[in-house]
Image (cartoon, rainbow, N blue to C red; front, side, top):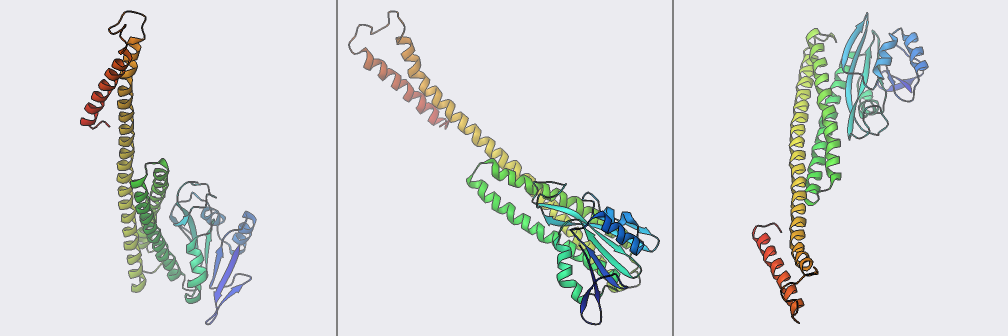
Length: 317
């Protein structure tokens, strides 16, 4: 789906064909023929569009004459309809930003809240002719989504921990493992985004060196991204420690169960052993006595009670 927006005076209108100072947003559904046709129409490198829809594409930037490409990764809820991971709670997907002399293009291979938010909110207030400011707003909002999802992850970890206090099932540990995968993606992509933004700032890729407000905004975005990366690292360390602790608790609980079962087996083994002796076809004490059976049963019970008492003193029960 290719949507073209342009701010004419106050209102934003949706166009049928690209015009100067417009924003072109490309999202599913689309096909390679559509993208190749748009590439030829706008005279932009074909691989700029194709790379941006590659689910495994990493954050980077590139220039081809007057056309600039910026690829950043943004977080989304995992719908399992992807080639990355079917289990993680969240994954990261690439979003391509193509800057032309008089146009700006955004493209993503999966629905994501970043572009949906821009279509719903920012496009009404932001002039697409100010392409550099447009890019900075995308970067700023992207960091905000990372931070939002990290807070959601922290909340879910706390909920699962409460469940684990009352349960020792593997299901809760599997949930923590899915969250751990999400945090790994977040850490890697936040770090990659940070490197790209710092390089863009150092090389003045967007050409905003003479704009103090834009420079301050870039600094703020880099700082916020660094804070989000630190949050992701902290949550990862906490989660790793939590999983280790609960794995140890589950293992310890299993050891306790096995110890109790072993103790019960030993206690029950004593009557069985006595009964086995008196089941032999040989002369044994009390063989001719009329009270032999009650005495043998009593001795078996007495020995079992003594062993059980010893185990209880040692807290094996």
